[in-house]
Length: 463
Image 1 (cartoon, rainbow, N blue to C red):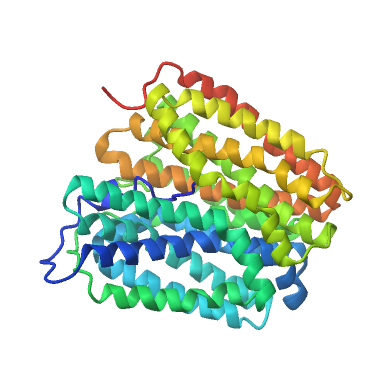
Image 2: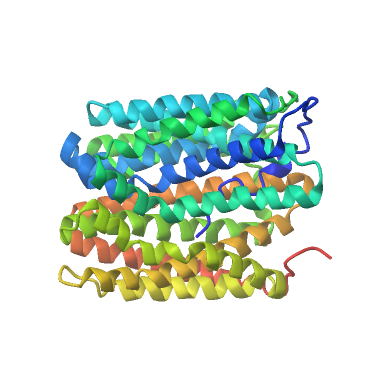
């Protein structure tokens, strides 16, 4: 399932940026730098899962601590992605990208050196903030390096493929690094990549700065609401109740700000369009199912079945290995038949895969579980490209980047909240919690799959 968290964000940033004279800089260098950065931030969203038991053994903290190791990154990444496109415009893509990469690299070092769980979680937050800057700036940098539309399209396709490959290979890479060295290796490996990006940026042309409005009240209240809600789900008890109250108040303020503000980070009017509402709901349900199941089964393979990190990572290979191919097929189906068919088929395939996983128990052979994970991945990978195309077609061209930011932020937030909820469920009893988690994900996809029928008759692109 492609994440491509800012696919479409380029529409907002690329037209606003004009390069200063490029001199002797090479477009290939800009593409390489952008591709490396996007791959890095996508990899860090998935590479940690397989290393979680090792992190728990080393630093302690229990299930809630492990949930925060994942969600601290995901939530910071998702929430701030609403505004970082505008920040990239204001600072210039090349400057924003260099800043984001430098901070991400330093935060990765802090993660690898973390002496305890609180410091690791704090460093993960900083990683997520930096990743939210890197992502749109990297795409803008790539697009500006290729003024020719045909070459630019190929470059953006290569950039997007890097993200898909990173998500697919994340569990395997996490298993290999954790087994060959230690869980800290999954963070230290970012250091030479970050350094290489910064060296490449020395030859990249500088982007002009452009004025771009920032909705600081909306951004701040969004972060507070999402963080408090996640805290309430993970921590529970009296502290969780207080966090839930904070989340409700911040959420109300957020919606009031967005309804009245001149430049909202989430224009509520977007959701009056049926296609936009269905695409966001479907993308969110797919993210809950995919990312939460990877989280739960990473724990299952190691804590229930006793597999090592490498074996656990390899167990995900059948699931992730077909994602990129299925993304391509889904895109072609959406182009030929419109988005409804692949979206509906994909979601119901994913539902069938989730129901199939309900049969998994403590004695189910690990190779069989690896195979049973495949339908879920195929269904999710079949759904995401057409839902993205449907959303992009439903909004005017000048709002494409904004809509893409909203869609992908919603998907990332949903994935983070899904991990928080499912992690809480399995903490109360793994077998029962796992089955309940699978059932919840199946119900969500069944509901959005039914709503996706309402997209009938809409073409994949405007005439």
